[in-house]
Image 1: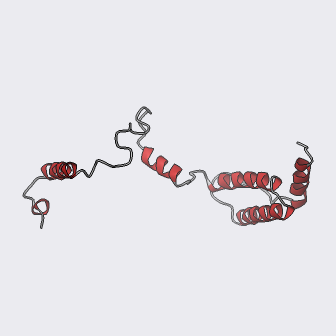
Image 2 (image 1 turned 45 degrees about the vertical axis):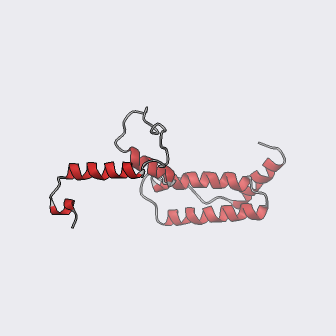
Image 3 (image 1 turned 90 degrees about the vertical axis):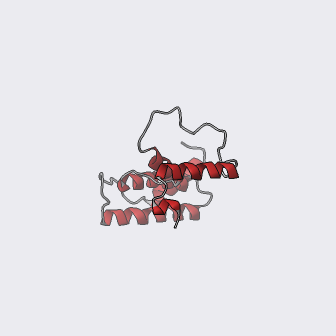
Length: 135
């Protein structure tokens, strides 16, 4: 049983001793960011900074599912129009249409979806128009 567990040393002195011993061993010498300013130190304090940073690192959205799907549909349309082949464009539209159809059957929480499955002919016409140099 360690001194801390037996209560012989109070927590602060135990913690201080652990830090001092780690410094003596050089455990803090080669840590990432050593000698560099803390990121965001000049920003106003935000008590949720750590969760926002984690969400950015993990590419997690805090938007309602309906808005996430709207954005995904917008990105899918742009990707289909820019696709190298018509088959690739059809695959992209098919995937997003499946997601839209599922969301229409069981609407996600949040704001109204305001989406309908894409008409593949309209998307392919936009793709052809862009390839010809149209707007």
